[in-house]
Length: 385
Picture (cartoon, rainbow, N blue to C red):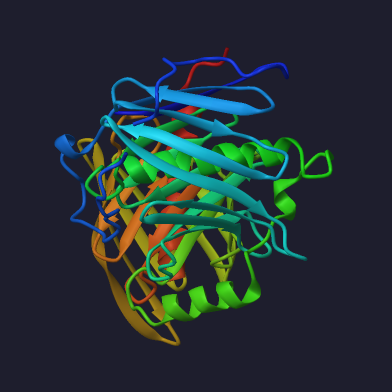
């Protein structure tokens, strides 16, 4: 797996210091950032190793990636606007990152030649939206699982953002080096703001919100005009005594899975307005989630599971198109790529975009529960330390 690594080395306040050769940062080719969804599973040739090292003090920061031929840095003045100058493949890209604090809704904005990013928190949850070039039809989502850990996952991009690193993989045919440079600088500015706000007080990212109600409503209106990728899945998987639970405030999925003897689980909870009661059974080769209004089965086939399912709404039965649940690396992280769905289903978070017309929330609740059982069974099989 090719990775993106961002190492933050916070240094004591002091004078500016050199990290790279003191030469004029050389201009970026005017390539467009491609944001349309490609066919699933981009080729290896489209992926790129990234290893971005960063050093900083109170007045400046610098970064470099030898493999990407990317280097740059900028100033962190008292005016709250970070300047950015990056060298990509021997040419120069310049811009700035600003942390805006309107009355209620702080937001982070990157502006560079031919590219803008706007990162703002959706009201009432830990989901951030990344607006690229003002296009509300093509929005990236970043989910926070703690004040300093975020995930970005959609087709072509899979990143885990920690306090001191960004790791994952990116399809460069969709998100080029110019986009990666802008994203890196913006996230660096966000992390600085998370340490200290403009008044020098501790900053709590959980208090962030969208750039404005008007913009958020515009985004929702635009999203609702498309039948594809209408809903975002943002399900947290948390362990509890003798089981686990699945919670997604956006999709209104709340399922508790209580372990029973012989590898069975009793599943109960609520999905939107549907009361859910059922069982989950099976071993590693085949697992079934069976409730009154939904039935989901996952059959193992090598490093993947073939998932089939059905559900009924108001007595009308519906069958879900079969999905492939891919276990790429055997690490408990599963991936689903298909027409109308793009998901990363990690041990603690199931994140991605779903076409609600093809994959109902009842089915998603069953799918998340099955992945939770797979990982719970693996953990139980590990020898105790």
